Image 1: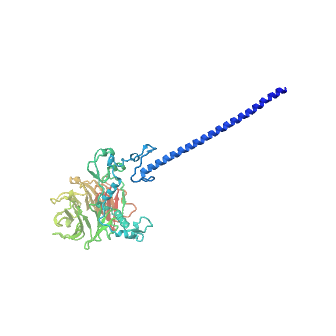
Image 2: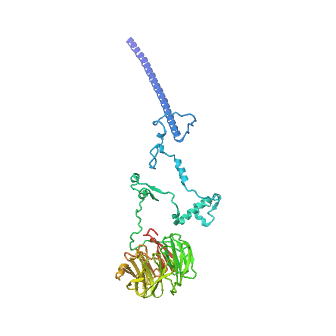
Image 3: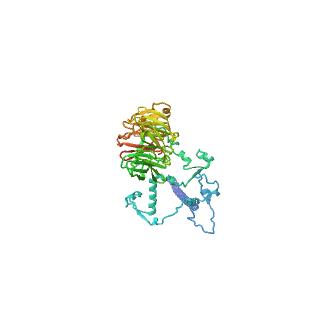
Length: 563
């Protein structure tokens, strides 16, 4: 038993030693394997790092090459006499100019398709500068001069900032010029248009704008601008005026710079719609430039021996005729700026020539004389050329048919029609309901006329029907209760103004197509002194009337787009 046990224990010890060695050997192998894996990882990281550095270097070199090509030799100065070798880039192979630049031709279709037709951009700017107009003379002292615009009250409006005080002479001149152009917009006609556009018809115009323009057509605005706005393509300059409410706004008084010292007896616009004439019992004739903002006074003429009862432009705009309660009258030449005194008229004993009318053809002046006489005076020679005689006294006159016919009315309640070519009365009719006629006026076309009376009644007639025997008026207007002193049609005969100088606020505007009075005129809650005279501008945009307070009130009628 002892031998067997001893023999049995030996192999077990040997086995243990072998197993220990085996475990140690396996551990060493595992350590060696782990060390090999670690070495491989380090080598791999180093390789990847080197590769990343190479990629970064390549990208950096590529970036610097592109910057050099675009902005010049920033990183690699070019040496004269040497040529750089073109290396391959990382983006798309060989880098050259055509690949780096793109020519955008959409902005200007006139550029040539070919590269040879390209134009250096600086050349056009130089040519544009050469084409600009140069000043004939420049004051060198302007640059040396300094102006304090904050010290003088009237120069403070030239400041661009509140704290600005001293500016140079050149800036002072430019700001004065800009201020003058801002306040005097009526001088735009004297400015030459430096840029004149021409449009040629062809396929380009049809394709781009859809509008074909004739060859050689010139205009101030681009044709394409029509399609770029939401405004009306057709300007409503002569549309139909609706009854009921009249759209208007109050402007600065026409004679705000110099009101009259007495009642205003005459107000009239010149044919250019910018010049307004005012006259009154203070013996002064004044002219104003009407813009609705400042209404600058242009000239004032004092007539020492004549209180002005009526002043009127000739229709051609060359003269002004002035009259009062005198045997003579005056003529003012607008071109020569001279005043001529005419009269007394040969063979006549009238002591007053205060009321007259000028024919639309500027050939004849018709004065109201004594005992129903009508005196016809040549506007050219200022001589008496003929007389007409009514049965009763004459109180009012009105021309028709371009100056070939004359209407008159007076104390007998009849309306006379005269043919000035034969100087005969070819029609006489009764004004319905009228005892004493006080005023007559005709529409610009001559198809309508209105007759006012001492009782304030205004009858509106169709002239053809009246001459044909129809005595019934189209409408009888009864909105005035005192003597009708003035009436006026506007340029398209859609408004008839009637007034009386015997009461305040006695100025009514009648809508002719419907023969109704505008309900919002006169303006509510505003005092309007007794109106003496009224006139519309040639295109209906302005309405001015003079009153007993010596003021000429100016209103803008929004229905009409032009003055």
